[in-house]
Length: 201
Image (tube, rainbow, N blue to C red; front, side):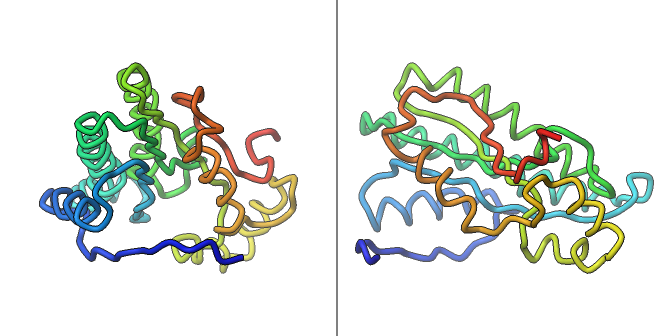
């Protein structure tokens, strides 16, 4: 069902701090305010921890954690300036709760993002800003393609998911809409798992 609306693309690299201002100003130029921020960008670099280059560690932490903080900070400043009851939604991960195979930097970043979500929620709830996170389970994405192609690892994952299948981006829509809407106005600092029951097992 078509409900209207518009979108604007801003191409930049979240490895660069200058992108924060570019994104913020782009949103303000297009819409005049920021009332919802979804921190959805993420990368990973797969290495055994003992072999991981420092530059790869820094790259993952920069995009998955540092940029989320800086974007949240910029958005919150604009919300406060305009007295907007805003919503910030971070995309966490199953690795916010448990260790990942060959994912030391990614696990550290997503664990940090869960903590950051709670910290910002506590500080900004009195200002009318809800900060929450969604932790997707194993989703069909370009990032997970190598795991899906590995028949052994793929089977191990599917055997653990009570729903019996990998998730898709469509499975996340409801959670995003809920956390971006007034229906979640008294929800602060949660990590909402959309994982097919992975953590319940």
